[in-house]
Image (tube, rainbow, N blue to C red; front, side, top):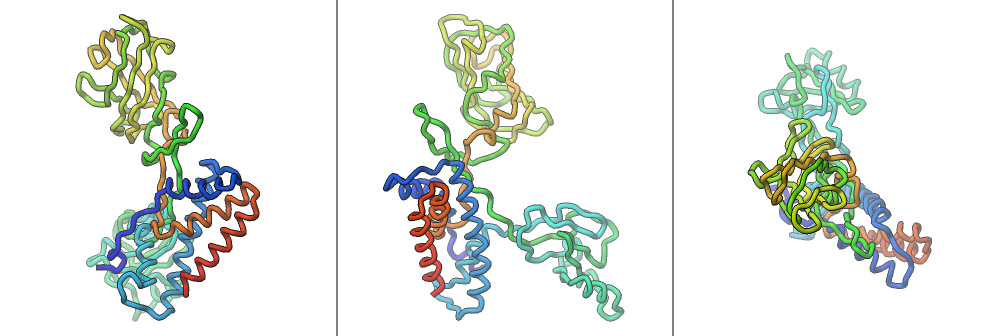
Length: 363
């Protein structure tokens, strides 16, 4: 078993970091860091810590090593790397020229998946590639293929008789995802942490009355709830493209007593559960004889761009570095936060502690 699976690390929680940073900044009433500012700084700091892993790995490989459990610095870096390691086919190809995956950040290796035994492909310089392809003695084969790597593409020799992106498999390190502290807005205008996983195809919690076509429908006053589904009392879903969105739930509130003519003034329609897999133009139908008592005509909601999570502050993306990096993350964000709130004392204190922490980690 690879050494970096000995200790499974938990990802650093974005809310833990944000609340810690705010607590330190606000301790002496030095200012405030908005969610948008925090997200930008957190993304930058995570990237800096991520890039430092490569420098540390190179340095630790040249230092005396220990096999003691929990003490190996090399194992520690490998534990961080494994979150970002990917194995994927080419993103495109033109005959035997294969384009690397779009999220590749650090190239590792590539294999010839269509060849017997899926041999590794030896990546050469352009000069070495030409010499070996033309050499009668060192001629590459399906067992020992070679490639040159230029402009994010590999040219593989010998070529296959037919071609596809699945001919080769790249092993690589991707970049961390952008950090996002998601929130909803409370009744007093305060930011409330939203731990829901951010997804661009998920709906935003909130009112969608403006996207509802009431027609001339009437129904009995009351509050009704239902989920997307195919049963009589469910909300029907009509996809624009045939792709399937799932998991949405809705609340309909009809104000008044008795039978009410439905309109934006008497009726509110809200998303109660975000689901995923939706796109602009998808529709939901609240049918007659369903979960709304006395509904005499179908109500239709047509999704627009404002109904999606990515057009709000909702939904969070956690740090992908581990909890063991919390100190570095907090200090790094504080250093940049001092610039935003124009407090040189915070900048100096955070920078000094960060330098000391780096020195101690390499002793």
